[in-house]
Image (cartoon, each protein chain N blue to C red):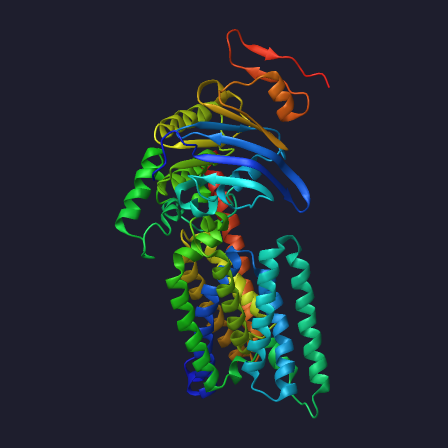
Length: 255
Length: 276
């Protein structure tokens, strides 16, 4: 890569996208720097998942352009680790934790067989997520939080430069969330992290940038959330609880 | 059973049952984990159009049904990939159109005297030698295809979006395996008939799924269970002079309910243990 370290890793320029004729996102422009920790927030149905799928090249924009490492997203999809929102994992499927993580090693080298280095990489990723002891368990025997860790391990096993997570904290309790954020913080030392979340708590300590997604994107280079931003982002009255001192509650928006 | 094997038709029936079970175990696993049972039913019934076509044109049965089923399979896969939320409607239509055109084509065939029951319910004891070679070839091909594409097949079945991001040709894998479903169904129709083929494709994998930790083990256990049901059913059909296809399916059904009962007992034991 001859990109300067300061060049944006991801660039959206005037992106618009509609699904089945219904506009989902419009006028989306922002740059994300290398080593950013971007929190993507916004209401359900506001377009968070759509934004991530555009970034992954799974959806094509109607207008505008998206560049990841200076290329169209589908050309560099192999450099992105993806943790989807609701992996079809809750349904019964005979697959072990190891085989799930090994999916992250698909197409990384020429041969179709699983190599010893694939297994080593999968075990390393599981170790990092403290899930190695479950390596031979069937994935649908695990709890929701444990499954989430396995899917993060699968994304890490791809050895990505960018890690994208779609609402990874759903189904986790507060301790689970705090652990996950600490882990993402560690990963963020070497990789760009992009996380869609309902959980505003993440902003206070971890995020370096915020994207508020509701039909369009309000992008902030700093991890702060302003009341006008919430209003613009959510477009409806919101109550916001921030973990400040003392415990502070923003007032309900007037319509 | 041993004395029955002195008859050539019984030996052929046993061999056909074993090969058909190998195919059913592998293809059925793919059908069950990908929730493609309705597509498999659609292909099986659309195959009837191929039977009509074969008689109408006076071409070999396999040629007519293979052609018709493959066309139906390709259309269904296209619909599944392009308009998933409408797929069930289209599959239902192709299902009915296949059956209807089969009947009309048979109506139009002069001097037609074929026994329809043979195709609807199968006739494993009338399987000719040539079909055994077809079944053997297909069993070998299916095993090789499943082994060669195993990692892709697993990834596509479990999480097709992630597989696509990793560069797996998801659409191609779907096409290949749905066409394999079509070919398998056409061959297995001779054994248990087009109405009953769905049961042999789905019951063994459904049972196997609960007791295995990998797709490969599920395929192996499904094949084994399908063999067990086929051979027990065949023996019962011989001993009590019953229609073989229907007896095989009812044997599988007994296995199905037995597995449900075993699960219920195990659940109660677990509850009992955790309560104690």
